[in-house]
Image 1 (tube, rainbow, N blue to C red):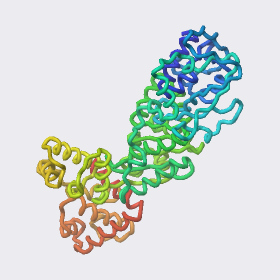
Image 2 (cartoon, rainbow, N blue to C red; image 1 turned 120 degrees about the vertical axis):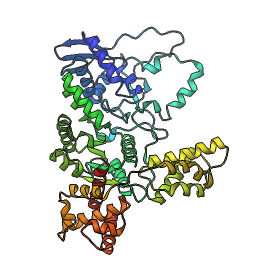
Image 3 (cartoon, rainbow, N blue to C red; image 1 turned 180 degrees about the vertical axis):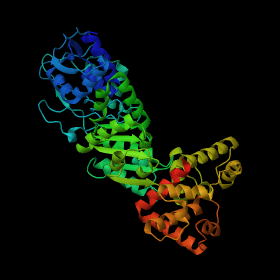
Image 4 (tube, one colour; image 1 turned 180 degrees about the horizontal axis):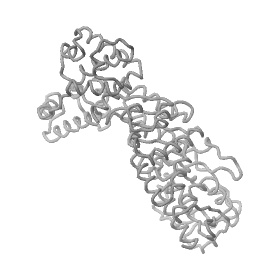
Length: 521
């Protein structure tokens, strides 16, 4: 391929990684000029554009060119403006030297999997690249910066294109409004802090997420949020990304599965250098379901070095998982220790009060009038997932629409009665719970039923009492027999002790969550 073809192939990759406005503004007037070995020379329409491309998009463009060529490459931006085309009678007046034109700002230096694109303000030529200078243009905050054009520079693409008369007014208004088309598909618009319902089950994770979103890299680095399926981990992850992006930071969101697939593809195509560059130039890295990299040697190795690079540069790392690091049994110790380095925040299933608050918020968002009595009936049954809770609400609303009746308490009971009758949950056996507890605490099952009063054994035994009471239909007497013939009052004391520790001790919550993860594996 010649220089023009290589640059066109690279532009297709860049187009998918930056916002449409940034791509049009900064890459629209470029062209491939010369290709010598692994060095591509690209023409920019002005000295300002060339300098901005070097400073803000240089690494990203180099990665795109490397991918297009299939090997490591370098890129250089030079000034070689193309002659301006003749103007039609209906075209705007040509710009004279010294005129200033309002331009949208350029795209953030982000990678292929960046979920929250930010349009930063261009840095002055020769100036330093300060993170705080990158600010999103939002309604009522600031106007797009005025960018001086050199005498030979070409007009802004949007300024030079003829615009139908009936579109002029809306176009002017759009400059002061938000641009939803700039938000990549991975950024869920509803997953922000404003729509997250806080309760006792998730208060720690919520507060920690807000802290790292407001001051990335300062505290709690890394932050690991763990909990069961459908409890809001991904919601908090996206909320962090939205807030960090609003602060002008480059944010990358990726699932562990996609990260694994990408490193496999990079090894196959011999583009690992380009892969590394994509994830090591961001300010905030968000990885969902990190437990899935356990046991995958190449993925663990690559993530280990990516983690180190970002952490040493004080870049924020946020991970989610359905289990604590100690329960990731196939994970290398060096990664496990790093996951435990910052803060581990848990999310537990919501209690009845929390479930009621979630249902209120959901109903308000749907603008459905539903009484408190109906919501109370909906919130009463225990559930392990917020998704399941929202599903029951949707079922009730569907029944109300089909029957043409208001969603009252009686209709709720009617709509949910078939589900309650058909739900047949497999009851755990006492032996399964005891085996999981023994495995987590690295003890023999005989030790749980023995007479040892060592602190570690005693705590494991109390956790077993608590989980036998919570996860099985066994009575207090039966639990006592399973644990060496202990009195039912001893079992009650052990359950109460664990409940108290869960309310105030993060390590206790990790132990219980890890055993529950083993039971559901």
